[in-house]
Length: 418
Image (cartoon, rainbow, N blue to C red; front, side, top):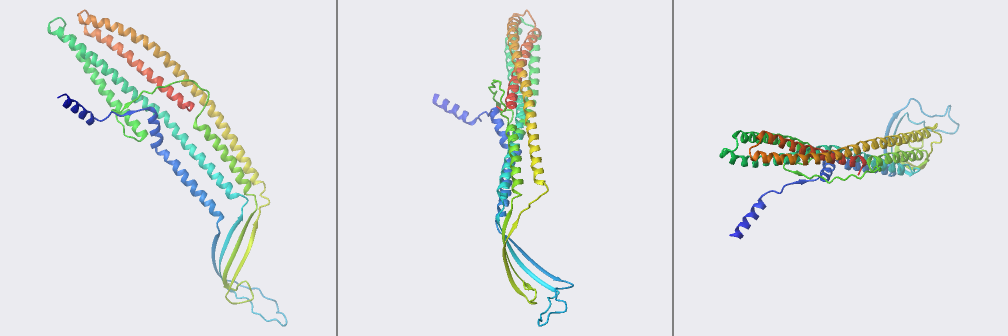
């Protein structure tokens, strides 16, 4: 029989779904992984790879096919002719088709410089997405701790309801024997119904809070999911490890790389070409017949003077770098201010929690005395309920302050980049 009981208990435990637990770090990870913005990183990589491939194709031969038919009002001729020479003037209608190949031989490092710039742009754009995703942590904190506070308040109200239910059972015996007035039991019963209303309201508020969190992390969770209270530690630090700091550095690097592209654009370029064609006339303008022809050669191109445009471009890049440095300095100052504000909130809630401990201790002593008086009928249920409300109001306030403290520490850690 005992073996059968153990088997049935085991079977029941297998049929019950395990209660889902969720930590703050897991929610951070889900937000970063599932939020639509995160998909941009892969798209940025694909876009950069395509752009670099386009640049590499600059090194490949280029083929151009051209065809032309024309009629001109006059052609080259010798005025009056030359004694002893007789040749036909070129036709006024002329036809030509050519195919030409160009092969870059030397570009002064322009393709390599542009490839490096594309990679620098990719790193900057990727980091910008990381910065934007990092900002989600503030919203995660807000939603997570709002849902957590409701979860903890519900536990306190359930505890209060349990205490009132037990007290009602104690009074029922006294009411049955006439030692306690029925009104005392009715008052406690009314308070239990009031608590049921509050629990219903918390259930609806929790559902709303969980829905917000679900939408943010793109994962279905409901109020049956238990949010774990994070162990938040505050050490205080002057170091800033925010992703924005890396973004500023990458922006400066990108601007510096663009200056190299500007310099390389001034280098000479050498390319080889080959042309084959068929036309009337061919290369011999004095032969009025269709002929095939070809030509090979090397082109050299060097822009010796650009009126200082390249220097102005470099100067513009240097000014942009100064702007980025100014933005970085401003960010550091604002971050320090945010850190100090968060530190102040942490210290404030720590002190308030210490005060809550004292209040709760005193309220518990008063309630014990009132519970004994109610048992012997020296006070009414109304007086007991008043003191019970005072105790649980103090407990709820303490839980609120603890959650606010955890939220302040979580926000501090996000601000500092911990």
